[in-house]
Image 1: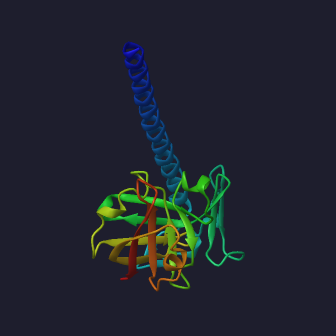
Image 2: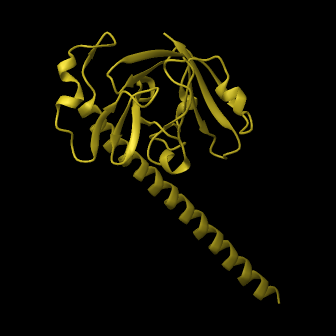
Image 3: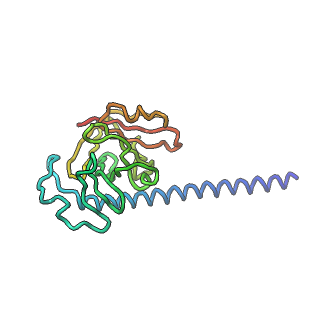
Length: 211
């Protein structure tokens, strides 16, 4: 009887170890796919964003509409959205984030859902114009997984599809429960970046002011 119980324990333990390894492998594959997807979108986005100097478009002749877009890319739409967007491979993007302290450059999608977040960070709420931009990202290492490593004073830049660069400075990092929706969107901060903790039970939130 004791021998059978021991065998069952060994089998159960082996099953749990295999399940854990499978989960680790799945998460690794998802993170790798997310990194490739965001890198690809960023490359296409950079190819159609006009050059800038001191936050202003240098030459309107460089506006993407005069170029022949790459496959799957359409030029920014400046009439139907509060924030101009660029269409890339069937998804809308409002621009990209640069976080030098983390060595990250990431495209930002114009619409939010869990499927999109597996490809790139997404606009969750607000806009540049209303000075209350909230961007959500998955906690993949190459997305927002390293946000807790940011420090007060670190610089975050957002470049719109018009080529205008907006510069922000990290002021504080806080942890919020997933139910704190109003605290997230009605915070008074010019820019908020957030992601889930690895347990998924809380939201790491980086608050930034315009620099």
